[in-house]
Length: 244
Image 1 (cartoon, helix red, strand yellow):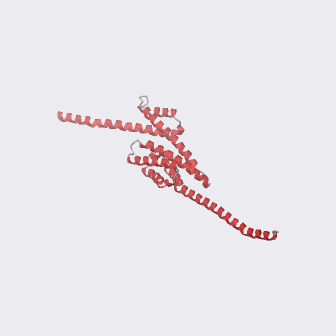
Image 2: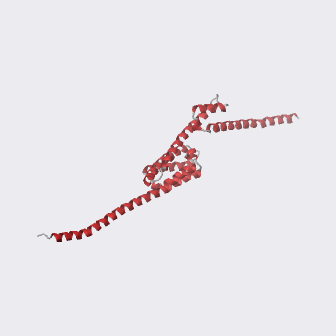
Image 3: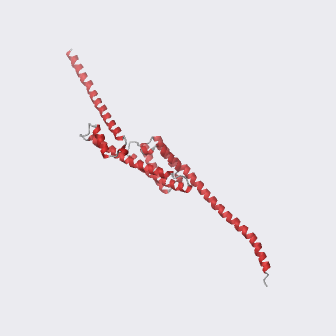
């Protein structure tokens, strides 16, 4: 016959050991999960502070949206290149691909600043910025910090569009300056440019370009005129000497 009192005693004793053991194991597992999460968050924050945050600061510091990468000073370009090169271990595969292309063009631009590298340099840097800001956005979401990268990306995209428009404006101004109808009339050139392009986009760039063109033209004309005077004067002097 089963002694239920004895069985109950054994079960009570086992429960007294099992419940605390399960509790300890559960606490350990939860603790490890929390620690792993904390470690991941710390690692993500470290990556953000080493690469993305300084990169965003450099974008603002250099006012790159006013010029484009290739038009920055050599020292400013080198700051970006050093930051990228020193932090490639933190980049995604796509970012790393563009970083490689960017750095190759950067070296080419520094060795040949007057070549055709500038266009490719700007294009590769534009793509690198887009990739880095996408990755920065993911980290900002995971770290629950303000999504600064989204604002930077939108601002940078707008600057690319404006840069493309200004290149078209520059090309059009040069075309008009070679047109006999506009060649000697700066006011007509400016009027035509403002009719063709939005004033809110082009700002005072056309005025500066046209002003520079006519100023250089006047200087060239003056130089040509003055270069002819000494010869004429010299000829008169020689004739006078002969007459004497």
